[in-house]
Image 1 (cartoon, rainbow, N blue to C red):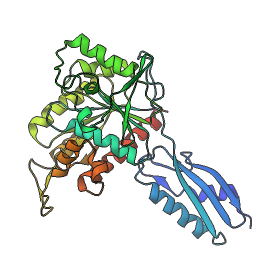
Image 2: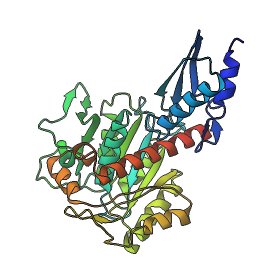
Image 3: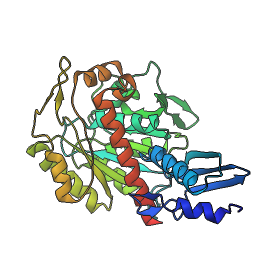
Image 4: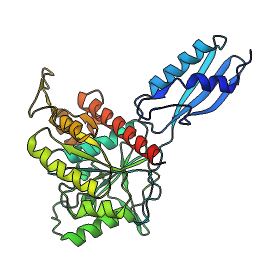
Length: 352
């Protein structure tokens, strides 16, 4: 009996995306199906290269096809991806036309490792195959320029600034545009203007995700970003202690009042890993931010440990995801990036 395309699609309907709650055929993931002699080939085109289930989808598809059609000798499943763009509402600056999703990373207070999270989230998304940019919008205390060190300065071509590139991340920071020891003593309007210039005057290439590292608090920089550009969603960074969580919730409420969806919380410095014995020690009350995320009914994207390798990566100007990819911290950032990408995919599919 000849195998028809509808027969193959019917088999593949058994594979359900647990986050999107639909089968991969209904979602339109199955593409370029070919049935030739004793060979079946097709693509599973996902909504992000960071999908944590891509290997499992491939395995399930191969097993199901072989079980249903034992006469088939070869099943060729190729995993591809196409990140969807967030909806763009009217009233925003006409900037970043080639950026599909803008993700704000914020915290209510300083000292929680927000920039470390932003840098390594960017790196993890890039490692997973996404096209990623990183904008350091912390005007008063730019640190991305130190965490992604560069021996060169950004180049200006015409009226545009070309971002730097490191570890497959395109990035820009005010730290590259001022003298290293020059303090930035600006009032609100100047801060807003500087951020608007970074948004409109940087020649970003086509990107799946632009991660925006915001300064701590709920001031002019945050308001400018949320009011002037179509932010897909926000990530809140907090350590697992009451003081950090109380201020983190203020940041969360600010985003909600600005109609910016909360994509999740990252619990940073969740526990300490001893470099000698690998024993885990809770410095704070590990899991407190995770519990708060449950109470607020938002995802906890990952619990990030603290270990000396993070300090080493910061000093060397290389993200720990790239410098020590097998470390537990690097794996935790990969998990966070996968969860973030899935939350964005769910949001974009729901809106459309």
